[in-house]
Image (tube, rainbow, N blue to C red; front, side):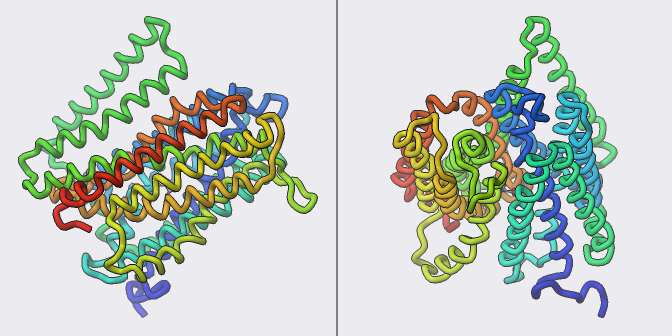
Length: 487
Ligand code: LEU
């Protein structure tokens, strides 16, 4: 058999290559994240960096934001310079180096170098692996959607196993050993990608779709230099006024993260390249974009606020054995893997009777909000200075992931379908950017969380999210009209 004829679960064999590449990349990412928060705020005597909790929470969030914000760079590099194959490979190398740096005992300095490497590396890798999955199928191939579902299963398989093994090593043995395991995971992914990719991925992916024309080069270089100068200028001014603290840098990134999508929307809506119908669809996307920010804000707090709750206020015991608090991070991917087939059946059974995308989004917000309102109970019932059983947290994830089923796959497909022809790849980045904006917003919000005020915190954040869900539901038929025939 020729290499290109080999299949994987009835799909092009390249899907297996990309499945395992992304599985190992997510393994390294979520394994590292499962222990990073604890590494930052644990006392130095316990092997940590001794940061304050609010700072550690805030860094986790802004880090998560930058990781998805940088997908904009990854899209550009692959489309215009290296092609997706090489871009993914270089990204994987940077990610692996990032984990290796954390495995060294160089404390804070290593932390910030590692963050920089993994932000750029993931920006190069993640959007392009997903794009290559799409590239395995012709536009009208009926296997396309299932292909993506299999791929998402790979994401969650990696995200599920990682907290268990990396978490165990990191929290029970030594943090740096945990980070080493994350690095090894990425290494396995890279080796697999290199050898398997040479056999089973198309040669087209070795070249950019839209290579930079020498005539454009000057303008691009000018833009990059301008950007660097503006950032350098802001940083200099900040330091002159004694404003250059970690917290203020986080604030600056938050502002940039919010401005990027606003800029994109303005560019799209004012472009001469889009038709009237397309413009209406972009307008329909605005409320969905805001809704996904609210959803991801709660979902991503599972790795920060709920992680603190797991470590500080939860009894870590099953059947007489204590387990590491990082294990709770496996709940999110676990519920995704459990629910995904159930929702596939629900949507098939409902067929044409399915709620519209805006309505699904509002139910999604409802579940996310309820998952936080639920977390008011342990404190209200038992007080905030005792420890409660692990089922409280597990139930919270069980609820928020129902929401994820209603927002994530639907949002992804709505994003591609509502995209104007001239802005397809930009709209694709918008989907990752909605998560990035959510986490940038979280970097400011999570500072307010602590055990004393947790009841109010969970109540307000959950309540506001539900309120927005209700408003979205009221306007859902209006939004549907703006979507002009897109389901
Ligand atoms: N859990 C998802 C992933 O890691 C988040 C993404 C959709 C922003 O792939």
